[in-house]
Image 1 (spheres, rainbow, N blue to C red):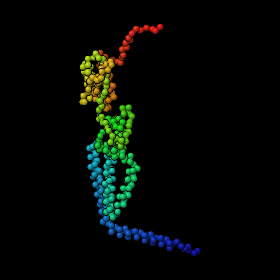
Image 2 (image 1 turned 90 degrees about the vertical axis):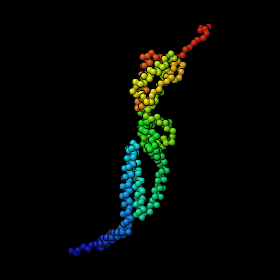
Image 3 (image 1 turned 60 degrees about the vertical axis):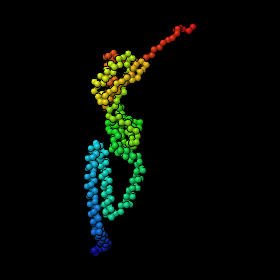
Image 4 (image 1 turned 180 degrees about the vertical axis):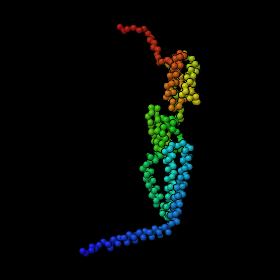
Length: 293
């Protein structure tokens, strides 16, 4: 039986030789590149190592500084990561320049891309910048009562893009930060003053009534001693003299405090028989009264 002849053997040998030649060429080029650019590569690696160490050190110091300013953990994390990325981007550019790569066109391309992204995200970036300004300048803090752009409430959350206000009925108002910066801001702080009015008859001993109200306020634990509560005579009505009661309470106790003050004052007046008149009118009929025929 005749032996089979393998016609593919020469082509297989040629393929192996070609692959070996290509590998040798690659090795030669790599060796040549390393010999010619070895110092540049070593310099680039050193630059990157220095950049990593510097970024870690700066971020560690920044974290300690932000901890002293009592910032929110997500904000601290974002700021430290942004600083880390900026430092590393700078050192990557320096490393590329050390390797002999032209970074000018790359920087120009990145600048154009950043401009395009900035134009497309004007609102988002505006909120971000405004949020950073609020965090660093601290025109208000979490827990304070503010009024801005027609909205009011207790600050519950300050984020990078928005601020959340909490109303007494537990509803929330979320305001974009760019709407806050540059607007007139009324910050009430963490306490608020009551404006309670009660009428007494014109025959009331006013110093006695005022002293009684002051005693009620002094016995109320939800009324702050500093600032001191104010009680004074207000307007003169048709059937009563108006007394104004203006104590201070914490925001968290404002509603319950107002209810207790009103209840205690009216009960104290009843105990001392101080009249709280209701609106009334006196009608006089002049002339004879009769039935027309």
